[in-house]
Length: 396
Image (tube, rainbow, N blue to C red; front, side, top):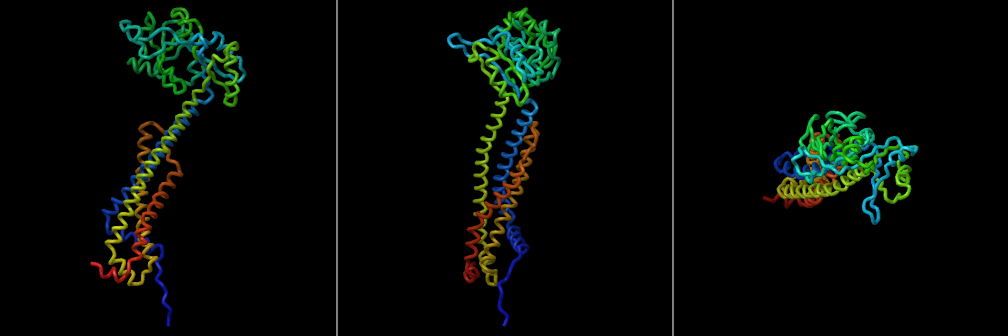
């Protein structure tokens, strides 16, 4: 007599059975997969947009360099604001690793479109005298017109920062503006300077005309210095003593690129919060899958009983419903991955950023969908396997 052996289902057979169960209820499958898709799309787009923004900042830092230091006067105890010596730019140039030094000095003047506007209405713009090598030191560029030179620095010519030009409604050169008590001609408009946002809100004139006609005393209010990358910290340690040997405590030294690095770190922190929201959406989607599978078990009791009567084991029943749950989650995960990638690409292109979706996100988010699907389908699968064949066949 031949011994009976339990029936076996290959992975291909199980996939066919699971797909058949999903095809029988397409509307319910779409709605259940939608919850998973929303969660995965949220997580992928959050990760992708954050990574794209950070990549933009990194590329910006690489282009602008992290070797720029800014020197400003600090507070002088008992006497208000301190001053940088007039010789401080020349003193900085004596430091060996230093490759560039530029200076600006604030003027007691305002810039206005017309002399009929009251002097106190400054619009928040600063008028500054500047050395001619400022643009080179900051790594900036002129978008319209030209930068100051030896000739124009001696005459009433002005170059506007990007915000100053925008708020004054000036988009071309040749326009005259009222600075102090005379007209200046706009000869250039600068592009945005991420490492020196104070220049974006400034009007820049030459040192010569500032001293001759605007009463500039020659004391710089800001020094910009660049040195070799490997010497930045060493230079930073001696800047205060070099600029003002008598009162180094009255000198403040900062590194503008630290602000961009801090923005990248803040972006990563905010991403963690949004990822948490995406995980909640994914969990809600998993609950929807579990609910769908439980209802499916209740509606298919006769099918389960028939399969059990024909020799299907409890393990095969469990595997069947678990396979359906995994396939349902996989569909939602694939759709969410595609939607998230498209959202990331669309947002990045709109902002002019590089499009970046980390490889680990492309692997981790579908894996998370499968884990949620397995957890959501486990209870319905166990419940289906416990249905007795006789009870199922008598169910109406």
